[in-house]
Image (tube, rainbow, N blue to C red; front, side, top):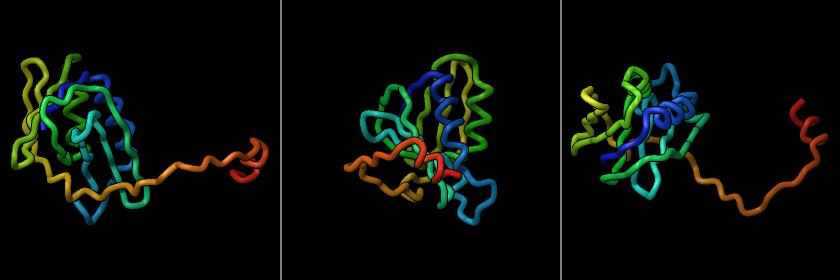
Length: 139
């Protein structure tokens, strides 16, 4: 996998999905953020088996692929990078290379196939209720 994106877009996307990364878990893969560059968009996903968050970000996919990176480590690294485009590349062993300007980080990754997927929910039929009913349901 090889993607190129802006630092601002990546920080925003990681910030959104990191809310679903558990602090303690018996499954190490859940401490990761799944980066999926299989289709025409870059999708980031985090899941703690109760809450799952998925977001799509802008960027260029130079080589399609998927990898799971440790959320805390990945987040800490990208926040400290200079304001420029970031290149994220993984090899066959899921070793991730994060490049931004002259800065290069190499962190271990995991196979994205091991990541727990969020169930697909089809949205065929919309539900229409009044705002007053919705307020009563929330209370």
